[in-house]
Image (cartoon, rainbow, N blue to C red; front, side, top):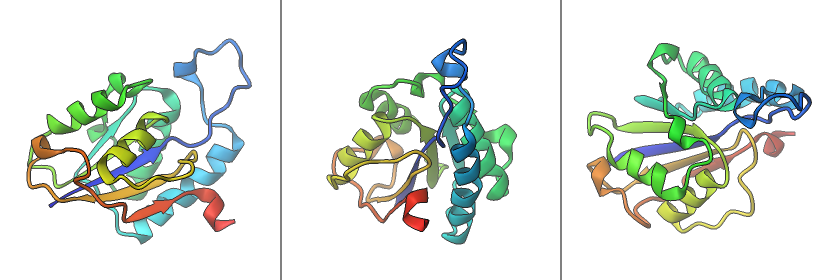
Length: 164
C-alpha cells in the first residue's frame, strides 16, 4: 500500500500588489496556522518519504516548515514548478511517475488542484479544502503507476479552524 498526503499551502498575503502571484508570502494568519498544523502532522505520525512542492513561495514556505517539524531534510524537498496552477491530470501524472521506492508522498500545493485530486482518488466530496488543510489518503496500490480513480480512502481531513 502507498500513502498520499495532500497539503494546501498556508494562507498567503495579497498586501503587496507589486508581487506576482508566484512570489506571494504567507500572511500573519498563515504564519500563525502553519506551525500548529505542522505539529499536528507530527502528532499524527505523518512521515513522508518524499515531499513534492509547488515552486510558489507560499507553498515552498509551507513545505519547508512542515519538513523541519517532521525532521525531513529541507534540501530533499523536490520543487515541481508545474504544480502551480496545475490541472488535476498534471498532479496525477507526476505521482504516477514517482519511484516505487517511496511509500508515502506528501504534496504541498494549491486549490482547486488538490481538492480535485482528493475527490478523484477517494470520491469523498468535501465542502472546502481550506488553506493549511491536510488530506491523508491511504491508497490501495503497490506501485505509483497504478494510481487511478477511487483507489484511495480519505482517512483524515484536518485544517486550522477545526482547532479554534
